[in-house]
Length: 482
Length: 94
Image (cartoon, rainbow over all chains, first blue to last red):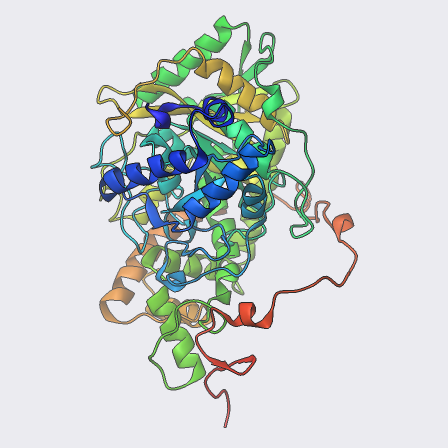
C-alpha cells in the first residue's frame, strides 16, 4: 500500500478503521527516510522517540479519543522548539541545542497525538531561499536532485514531496513556506500574521515571522492549520480565529480575483506566466470574476523587506553569546574576545551579511535613509493591498519568477537570490495570508506554483479557492514518490 | 561598501570580526547588497502621508500573574559553563 500518497483524511480512515496502526504508519515513514533521505537530505534529526509517540497515539485511537491528527506523521522545521529533541536552526550556533520547552505549536500537535518523525533542514536561521546555507548540508529537490528545494523551509517541502512525512511545518518570513512549496510541487500556506503563535519559533524577524503548514493539498494544510491556530498568552500578537477546514468545498462562483499587472511584467519566466494565466482562466471557468489591479510599490518591496527583516534579525541574533545556550568558542582571553570568537565561529556567511545590513540600517546617520524609509514603504504597501481588497476577494500571482534553480546558482552574488523573493515578500510586509499551490510544470517537469492572497484572517477562503483548483489539476508525481 | 573602516565599525557593533580574505569578500558582498538597498532612497514618501504610529497590540497586554516556571536544572541544561545553580562566564573585570 502506497501510504505516502494518501491524504490526512484517508489515513485517518485507515487508522480509525484498524486497517493500520500508528506504529505501522510510523515505521513505514522511518523506512522511507532510511531509504530515500540519504539522497534528499531533508532531515537534520530523525526522532528516536517517534515510536513512543506512535504507541501513545495508538492508545488514543483505541480509546476512541483520536482527533484529526492523532497518529499522523509530521516533520517539523528545525527552527521550531521541540522539548527534548534537538533544534538546530541549521546553524553551528545551535548545533547541540536541546530545548527545555515546546513551542506552542509543538505543544498543540503533541496534545493532538501527532507524531514528530524528525526535524527538517532549512537555511541557517531561516535566512535564504535555497536550503544551501544549512550547517548540516544541502537539501535536494525531489523533482531534480541537482536543483535546490527552495528555502528557507526547503526540508519541509522536500520531505512532503518525496513522501518522507505526511505533512510538515515550516515558517515564512518573506516567502519561506510558499517558495519551497512552489519549487517542490506541494501546497504551503503562510497564515495571517497572528493566527499562529510564534512562541518557541527561533526568532528571525519578529514582525514578519509566521509558522504554517506544508502538505500534499490545501485540505491537508487546512487540517494542520486548525490544529496549530489560536490565541496564546505567550505571544501577544496572536489572535483567536475561525477554523478553516470546515470552509473546504464552499462555492467559489462569483468571487472577484484581482490580478496585479506588476507581477506579470519583465523578469517572469514565460512558462510560469503561461501556467498562472491558464490557472486564472480555469477560475474564470468556475464563475470567478477576474479583474486587473495594480501594486505600484512592488519594485521597492525587496529593499524594504530586507532592511526591515535584517534590522530585526540583527537585534534578535544579539542573544547568541554562547553563555546560556549554543556554541561557545574556546578562543579569546577576555569575555568580549570569546563572545566575538563565538559569533564568528557559530554564524555562517549569510547570517553575518544580514546582521551587518541590519546593524547598518539601524545605526546613527543611516536610520532615516534606510530603516525609516523601509517602514514607510511598508505602510504604503499595506495601503495598496487595502485598496485592492476594496473591490476584490482574492489576489492571484506567480509564487516565484523562476523555477527551482541548480545548486550553486546565485551563490556568487547574494542579491540575485534576494531578487527571487519579489512575489512573496509583500504578503509578509502586509501581514496577509497566502497559499502557494501547484499550477503546472515546465518542459523539464519542474513544478510551477501560483499564490492566492487573501484579506486578513481569510485563510480558510484562500485554502478553499486553492482546493477548488487542486480538484481539477493534473499532478505529476516525482520519482521519489512513485 | 568598499570602505573597510565601515565594515570594521559595523562588525564591532555586531560583535563580529573579519580579517583578510573574509573581510574582502564581505566588503564586496555588502557593496552589492547596498546597491540594491539604495534603490529605496529614490522613493518620495513622507511620514505625514504614512504615520509610523503603533498599530494596536497594547490593549492585549496580559495581567502579571505568577505561574510555575522552568526548573533551574532545565534552564541551565544548555549552558556550557555551570557552577552550582549559576551560569559561569569568564571574568568580566579585575
